[in-house]
Figure 1: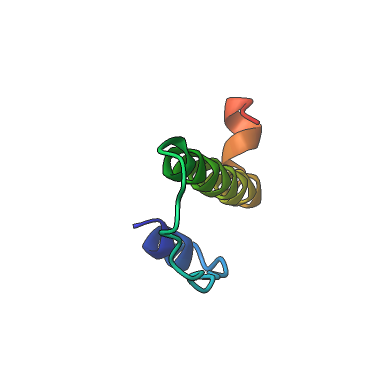
Figure 2 (figure 1 turned 135 degrees about the vertical axis):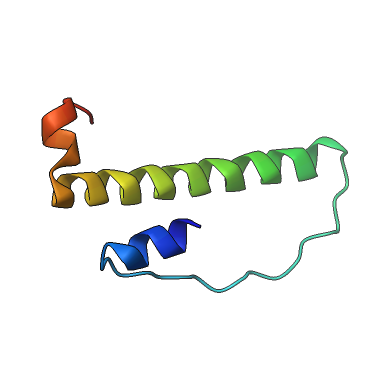
Length: 66
């Protein structure tokens, strides 16, 4: 859905490669920590993309956002 939104606004779309699967965890908290780190990275990218799109279209200037 986010990809289509960016395509509709004529923004570039970069879909990175998928890293190898990690499944050799020793402690039960390791997969949770990995998932949290991945979610933080994705959230940061989405926020950056949305802010760029908003600035480019003038949405942030009107709303006083980021």
